[in-house]
Amino acid sequence: MSADADRPTTPVAQLRGHAPGPVHIVRFTPDGRYCLTGAADRTVRLWNPTRADPAYRPPDRGGASRAGTSGAFVSAQEYYGGGGAGERGELPSALPMLSYSDGHMHPVHAVGTNPSSTVLLSATDKTLLATDMVTAQNKSKFWGHAARIEYVCSVGEEIYATASYDSTVRLWDARSRSREPLATFEEAKDAVTCVKPTRHTPQLVTSSVDGKVRTYDMRTAQVIAEDAVKPVTSFSMTTDELTIAASCLDDVIRVWECPDAYNVTGARKKVQRKLHSHHRSEKFRVECDITSDDAHCVAGSECGNVAVYDLGDGRDGDGGPGGVPQATVLRRHTGPTCSVAACPDKKRPWLVVSASYDGTAVVWASQAQYDCVR
Image (cartoon, rainbow, N blue to C red; front, side, top):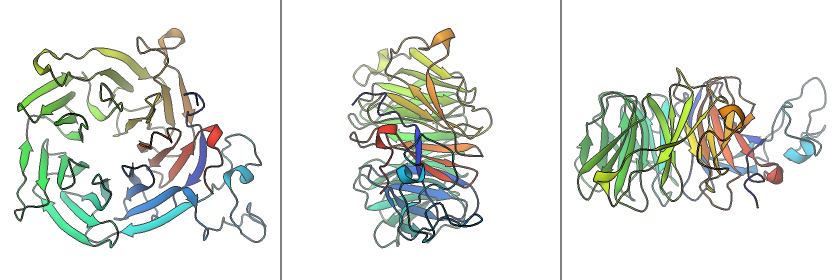
């Protein structure tokens, strides 16, 4: 299937269940089968984004519901009458699986899992919680940051990483009885917004409001600091980890080659593309993510849109008429779209989920997969 056919274009379901208030974060599990949302209601929820909730009944708006007088569920294809990606009323509701609230004393701004998806990682203010995904019981807590945790991830099954507004990245060992961090990285001069491990080499990549994307080589203890010029709020890497896309607070996503893992001292950033004009990122922390086929970069926006930029049509220049990169703009949210996540499953590059300050989370799919929610 071509990259154009796999481009997410259509809202196919909504994740309903959080109390009114912003949905701060959305993430897929590593296998891409499920997704997680964290919100201002102090809960994390687990969803199956391609299964319909049989208990959901669309609201009655002045008579019979769109689902019929019986209130039975209808698919997105039936709801839209087989037509295009309209913005018409209620979407089908995705299937809620579990809810996690134990230990969350503040709104949840960061979520993730370990590689086997057996442990939920969630950040509530300055505390990292590790929770059993099946029993929903807390396994351990980690604290020590001086400001709110902004991003969490797993570096192996039992090593966790947190990035914080206190300008540090900390590693935590779930096997240790000590609650002290295994390591602390303090090179950032401002808030650290994102941290991710590389899969092919023992490296940790971070981004910061100080405008730097730093790569920590665990073998040599070296640090590569690449200057993105503007504050970086999020980044994503291609599946081969050779290209990185960094979302900056000047309405631009900068795409460049990653530092050479085997020639650290000679690595230099070379910006290949600048993605802009179809999203806004000046005041809010909005995310970007690259689809599993490396064909598109999905970005949130302060105006509520989701922008899907093309990456496959040449990597040099801006790739469009007049220097404006080509993109598809998805409209559904009414508030800033703070978080986006592309499905990591290589068989489903057409699946994306977005979360917004308007309190909604929406599942998007390609036109070819229009009726994927059943």
